[in-house]
Image 1 (cartoon, rainbow, N blue to C red):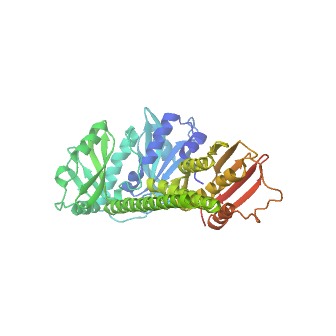
Image 2: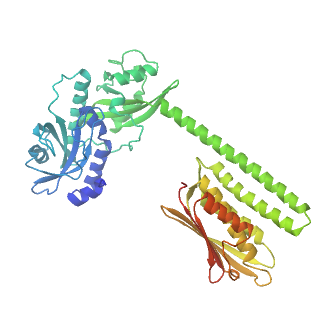
Length: 485
């Protein structure tokens, strides 16, 4: 398991809190640097700042634009100064240096460039760019420009102006160098545009070659460059042209305190935004379905209520009232689902109306019941919440109807306890009523309510139901897995 950067740095180095935050910002924003130099980057810090006899690898990033030199993660590796004398020199002098060395963990000769990481007035570590020396291919224009831009970022790292003081956390759809890159000069003119950047501009309806043009002329927002240059931090925005959406990330290039240009990364996110809109539409449709189901269930409950008023038989009237309560319990779940995004519902929002239903059933001048809820379950999938809500409703109704006979009790308490962990959900309904009848057995129980609970809990939810004496009263416990198989 990977060791978190903060934990590793605290245990193996003497970096203070400000230096740790600087290192964390660097690691959060250095992927473009690895892509620009087509190389692995290692962040090293001395394990003993007095002697600097060893350096620990705090972070390792691989390029997405080229082949990695190190397939295995090197984080936590301790490098002896004898194997990386250039690292020690960069750390001691504060100057960028390069040369040949032996690859870590092998005998292959590699080309390394060591860049001191400056925080304030102090060098706190070294970024080592490591690449194979075996490639004899001549570099094209794109490679030459990218390496030149990397060198400018390397000088910023050595001067302490990179990473930027203020930078948004990188999102999954953030542009990368390979998506498309534009290099700007100090005046904001386009000095170079990668083929992927040109293609993105073409999809936006801009067909002129961008080289030599201003940002406004190529259809990009010049105010983003002004903001990035003035505030000395990256600016990200989304640009829409017709049906095309492009995410634009502008990073200023700073040298000796002056902005000398910028790098603009572009990513065509049209398909991503189309899928986002489809998901929003799907969620809205699902919520509308839940809303209509809830309305239909409430109509059914109202019809049952009307029918119950016309029935003369007490047994039939009681059966209709029970059916009405069950329908209302299911309607509560669908009402909550109609308000939430996706097929997840806050079960804690369902509990309150379920308790109100039980309180309505128990309301009587001759009997005073107090309901209380302890704990919570948080959010549950709809296919778990619905049967669980119906089962909980049945257990509360059982407590109301059987635990407190009017000839023996005038008041009582019903407690609902809710808990969950990574594997299971536990719901307990406990009362302080008259308790279970002698020789009670769940297997031989003939009541419809317990039969419904058993069917839902064991059949639909794959869980268990236990009913035992609560001393005093009765305790019913539902245990179900957090996910359905």
